[in-house]
Image (cartoon, rainbow, N blue to C red; front, side, top):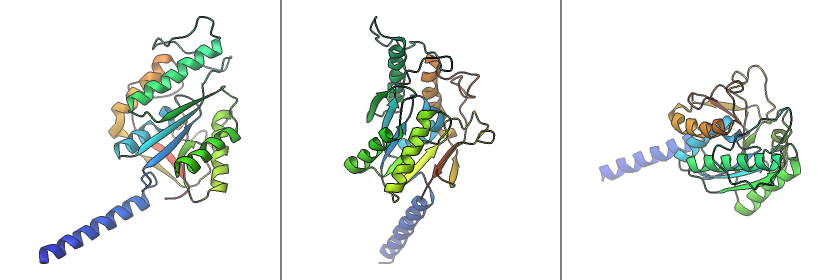
Length: 253
């Protein structure tokens, strides 16, 4: 009888521990399905590859919506190479070629992390608007009942900012859901010290992700191979260096 009573006490302590753990860690919630709304292929890796790895390792089911094809062509846009031999029609435009290669690179990363639940929206690079992203997020909540959303913070990139503004609209309409944002260029900005991004929230946590360095490296390597990440632009772009932390802004525990 005493052993049974001790078991009950220990079980109660364990439940209390889990309750405190989940109520104080903004990344771990009782809701096991989480949606990532990604402006461009590589944003998820640059901004949150370690967080993504941590969530998957913790048993969460992740859904991804890739909003643009990343097909922008111009003096201020990156050029890509067809490293993975994507099948491209001979008469495809330069924009079309770039979009196909970048969308394929996203698929390559999804294979690395063993995620099959994703959707490619194929919107032109630079043309994403707030209402398009809001519609995707709202449908995920209303139809799939997803209650935890991740996307980028606002910055000068119009597609990043569209995701930021869409999350703002979601929070205004559905304030009881959980919203998390990650700055895409956190490392490039000297851990946010030199060029602060626009976040919806004041609360943030810097998460150590060294335990997932190998997966992070493999994810980065894909984009390094097609040249969307350049050594001059991002410290981890050689596909080898992987280190902590990553920053997440959040609205509620």
